[in-house]
Length: 353
Ligand code: 2P0
Image (cartoon, rainbow, N blue to C red; front, side, top):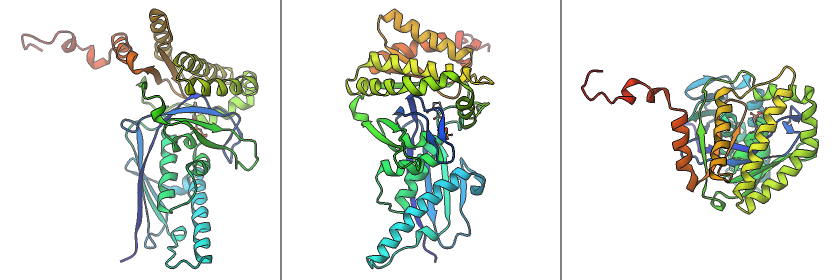
């Protein structure tokens, strides 16, 4: 029987509080600015990826949420796999030089990759982030690569920029770096998830439809056409990266909340300043933002912070002590359709419905 080697990993979703939007090098996926995110718990949103390598396989194959997709159709996927393979080939060369017996030529064997999300793909919930982070972590495990998570984040980055941040839990910065080859454009953990366990995230799925303009296309149009964007990159983001890291270190929710909302608002302002304009938020998204501000005003302190990515869905951060009130308020103001049926209002005491 032919040998089969296998690895299975899961990777989490991350939601940026300082947004990545814009590339200075589209091929290497080098960003115009640094960004910072919170990694969500894997209990609810995650990608699970299994990879098998065998000399019996004919070619690389990929199944995404149960459907086979052509690996060659995605240049980024090919790039990420090729980069990980070259790290494995380097390891095998070293092992042979050191005359270690039984070097398994995994770098030469085709791969079968099976990846599943437990949430809607491409609904503005960062599926490419957990997807490529899971792919690269699984390749790292399968190939027994000696590289650190930060070093491997460079490989995840060539799949999708935001994926480099999903290589860590907790609070993660993607340092834009300055090198042309991308060697210093990688993710670092700012604080572990134990650092601020009271911080929670509420996800409000306004729509699970695929977004109209992909992030990749949208951000390049922004780079080319928005004048506000240049100012954001030059003066605003560096200041906010420093302030956000301070807020996280001090567990200062008031500052964390204000910067998170301001950065989300500026990202969407820059999208609107793009020509033709890009509108990711809709009326429901804006009503949710208004509600968060009303909640904070009523409590007399910033108790909740919204943020929106390239879609209408809201993520609201709040501390554990405020989350129950927030959820009650949101479900009261935005009842789900199934809660507004006559059955929900009138529990049918006479069995007539
Ligand atoms: C972020 N987003 O920082 C920002 C905020 C969307 C809005 O990262 O072209 O899917 O694959 O590098 O990573 C979405 O961009 O784009 C994104 P590519 P990606 O989370």
